[in-house]
Length: 338
Image (cartoon, rainbow, N blue to C red; front, top):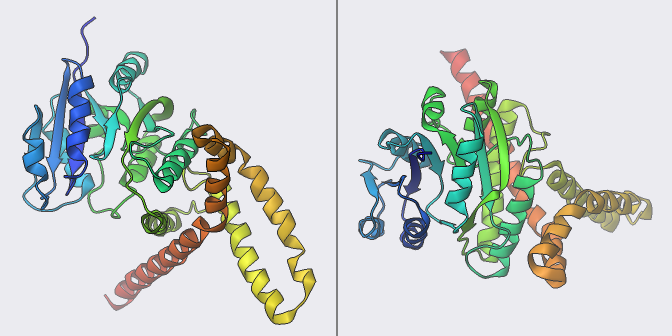
């Protein structure tokens, strides 16, 4: 049977550090029915020169327009019947493209399939290892009916992508794939998460980068969730497990502060129950940490997730709340004065 043509779409903006490694792996592991399409979003770091060394189609945007516009331009300039989206800091493995081919052969036109990061990242270091195991677990815990599919590994037929309007270009700086996933589901498409469809991610995370990443993603997620009224949804890396962990952390901070001020031990009574509930709810995540890096990594990653990571999440939460209600207030004011 003749293979369906596959277009691999990669947006690139100042990705000189990783785009060469990304394309090296794609060239090594792609088959004869693949085309690689890189859309450069006005990079300033020499990325284009690196891309030009590889056998791929290069599309250069006339102005910096964001990842959604880059992906849409990549689709417009592609020729494949099927699209496979990845990022410029994602590295395919020998198993990735064959897995995409298997998905194409098994799934109908109204099914969109997502993949995830490998449990271990491409680069070494605790914070990257934490993030890779963290995302792998939360993105694959609901394979039959995921809330969204991420564009770091998404397989969709070209016709389906175009018929559904592509990615929204005047959206938030991130989360456009979540918006697209929700639109697909409203339009009758079925979303499936395939845990075996994996790419290795280059994180280059430090403590600061890890916390800034958590802050930024939470900030925009809160804006989006408030606008869509699904703040309490059990959604991937915005899972109820993370939310309960955050509630336990914030309650500890607040009640310990009140205890310090008022000296009443009864204020601390709820804390053991909250943490017991959080630990129980997150038991599978801690097991995923253990499987990814062993006992010591699990202890360190679990401690980081429980005791430090929530500070960035709550900071992002309150910033997102402020941004949403500030924008909402401006819109209402415009309506009244217009």
